[in-house]
Image (tube, rainbow, N blue to C red; front, side, top):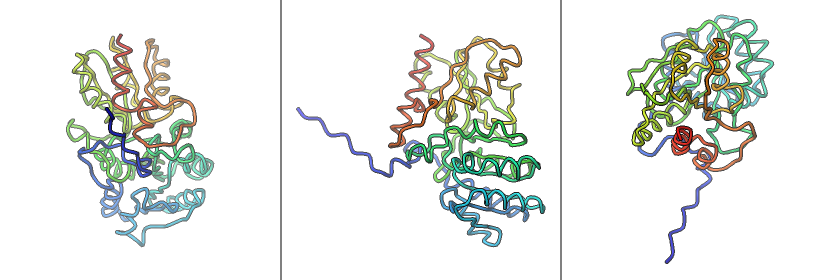
Length: 330
């Protein structure tokens, strides 16, 4: 007896969406939200480092060509120019890949943007493990790099709802922000949970008596999926979404963590310097002594490959989350 061969993954799977087949999505929510915000405020301008199509900035560029600036493959110039525009009273949104913003242009962001506390909004594409192209494009340590930068707010949205609601709030904030962008066909998840994005606030999406998930970014979607799956194992899971990593809503999160439940953090980022360590530091400062289980990427340069395979390999898939929780509960 022979078995059918497993279909060979095509190269396109390496940049495939992490959205499940049949899931509700919105196309380019960032680009459309920026157009809407710019229609109401003519101070908003857009810039990109030759990546407008790949960060959904092209939506804005088409609508407002006179307010869009293509800076070429020069991230330092991108953020230096954005800083100068902010000094004149404009509100720049500057997009590139997260790896280039964090690794290549850190000094320019720090000295030109963050130190004078300018309203420059950095839009980072491909954050965490959202591409299979390997270490050159996987921004798995971007939050760790940026958390130490004074004045910079860090937003890790779950879905289209988060992005659409975050954009006008970022534009209205006084200082600089960094948005971990989800681009293309972006899942719509939070519309079912009576949720509203508020910069600097965490929100409980689901109550549960046995386990509490503290999550950010696309992992909130996976956490909600895992919570549904775990209910079949008679495990009652609560989910707390933390879209703003900095400033961190310690009051809300610690109230959820400081219970007898198993506490688990979930993030699309290395276990070093991200959500897990943000939660752990807040617990230590307030004297909460309990174990928190991190579900995060390992402290290493990750392999290249098909995105679904990588998520399974590194523990971000729904299957792996369910397995880990059941193991922890014994």
